[in-house]
Image (cartoon, rainbow, N blue to C red; front, side):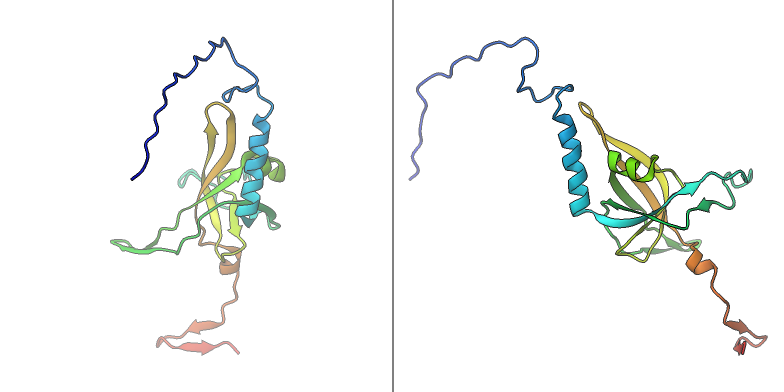
Length: 187
């Protein structure tokens, strides 16, 4: 049978404190606040994944009908960054309008790290390609995740699967369909 211990002595009353002390946890002026940012940055680099980040640039051609730039300019040389995401299988849902790819992905970056790597904040239209996946994503939404007391430490980017990629659009046509429906060899 387990013994039950009782405390017979009353706890001493703590002194009443006015204002903060050097040991206060919720002190916004505490110099250790930056330590939390450095630890968060290191955790994302260690546990996160390497990614290729393609910056997009503003374009003057703007289509009034589709409310977007027709030819978005995206950098051809990527910047290697580290971030956190959860890889998922491409889901092909059959709807009334055909097959839809629903593979939205969330990427989490440390704010100070990604801004120093890109020399700006992530923007809608930028492309991300994880090194361990042969898929490219386009950022559709950028949010700042924050702790109320200490500030902003994370940038959360929501991205959709990019189907129009340079690798898929600039391929040479090798087979041409003839009138009967078979293939004619071009050589």
